[in-house]
Every structure is written in C-alpha cells, then in structure tokens.
Image (cartoon, rainbow, N blue to C red; front, side, top):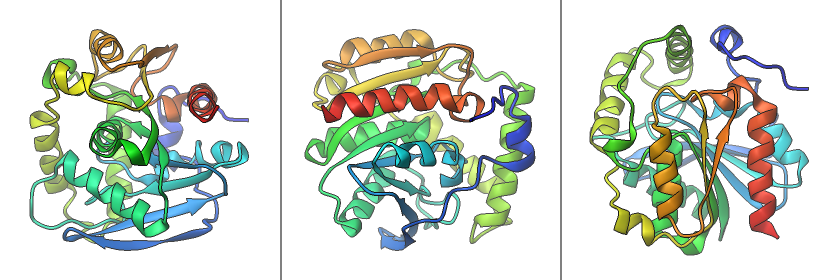
Length: 268
C-alpha cells in the first residue's frame, strides 16, 4: 500500500520508491545528447515523462502499479536531467519531444500512451500534436500550454524540500554533477519562454487527452486547466483533491487510479 507524503518529507529524505529491476535500460544518441531510458513489464506501451529538474526515478510509485496492470512502462530522463546529457544549446520542449520519439524508434514502439508531469506533460502534448499517429493518448498533469496559465511563484517548505531532493539527485546521477545551478537557470529560462500554444493550436490536437491538476497546485491556474479541457477536442478535466503539483509523490494511490482509468479508457 502506498503511503502519503503531503509535505514531501519522505521524498526529500529518501527520494521516491526505487525503480524496480528494468527489463532493459541504456542510452541512445540523439541530436547532440545521450538519452537514458528503461523499460519494465510487458503489454501496451506507456511512457512516463517527469517534470522539470527531476528525473525518471521520480516515478518510483507509479511504475509497479502500471506494470501490474499489464503494461510495458518506459521511463526517460529528459535531456540534461538525471543520467541524460545535453549539448550547449538552450532547452526546448520541441527538442525533448524529439528525444521521446527517438527512444520510441529505438525500442520499436509504433505507438504509446504518454503520462506527463509538469514539463513532461508539455513535452507529451507537443509530441502528440506533431505525431498523433504515434500517440494513443496523453495524461496531461500539472502544466500550462501558454504563459497565461502560471501562477506567481511563492516559496513554500514543500517546494524547498522538492528542490533540495532534485539537487541531491542531480549531483548523484548527472555527468556534470557540479553544474546544478546552471542547469536550473537554463531550465527556468525555457519555462519562462515556452510553451506558446494558441487556442487554434490546441483545437488541432487529435488524440485523447486528460487534463489533470491537483487542487492545491503551486504553479498552474485552475482556470487554465479548464481552458485546456474546453479547447482541446474531446479532452476531459479532473481536479485531484488534497494534493498539489506533486500528487504522484504525495498521494500515489490517488494519482495512479486516475492515470489507470485514463489508460483503460483509451485502450477500450
């Protein structure tokens, strides 16, 4: 049974649950970077895309439940995050979407569902928009698709604990362990300038999408989540109770139930 971690005390101290033994893992070379990925279980493919400054290990509470549901689960460290490297070009969601597609090609995955968290949600939706034939659906958790969707930043102890864990993980996993502050500045620059989807862009998305947000999200406006659900054809809106931007860590059972409901719906 999953325990709750509303204040991220356990996450700061220990990280998420350790990922299980992978069926396969390694790196691919793509567009000036080495992208780390791992595969667990068997069945229809679902790809988990973590948030900004994090890494694939943040999905430790989700991978076992998804595997137990009869799915092949792929986790990826976004370029410059975790074990993946980057070149000296700016971060960009389009580039990270291309990395996901390259991993799919390497693994021989013609199509996959995408579960994205924060930056990973933006990456997932951009990939779905550009290559709808490769994406069976997007579970879009806790992100914006234009600058109007974000709240003014307000520091909190929860955010401080998450940031501290991200620093520890980066120093432990990265090929450039001393570059965390530069990494944060570069990712923040991307977040401040991207994405920039218009209502017309959103209306052109042609895959099933679930817009999901924690009721206490620290970064994303609920009105923006509602706008995305209203504008993307056929999209649904779910507001998760009791949680914030970090629902996969705070209340894993709640988050996993919502994700599995979506995956079952698009598979039927």
